[in-house]
Picture 1 (tube, helix red, strand yellow):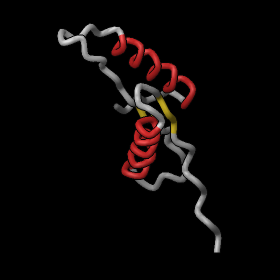
Picture 2 (cartoon, rainbow, N blue to C red):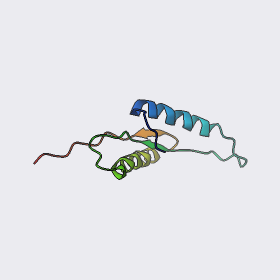
Picture 3 (cartoon, one colour):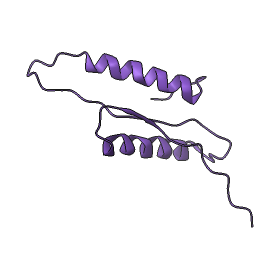
Picture 4 (spheres, rainbow, N blue to C red):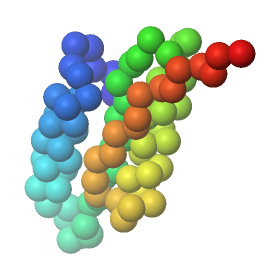
Length: 83
């Protein structure tokens, strides 16, 4: 999901609200539904959209490694090393 105009703090709050709504879903089989959300904020270091999505994806996998059903944010892209 791409959200324009939110910084990482507001995007995290939005993701937490989405997670809360998903947790409230009553599945007919009584199975617990979990959701992992990874978010990233675009930075000047992102050379293209794929880098931004890759950082969000890494945050998603971190959420899954930490037990699922949570939100994790990626750090801002690092500045390229100067030669």
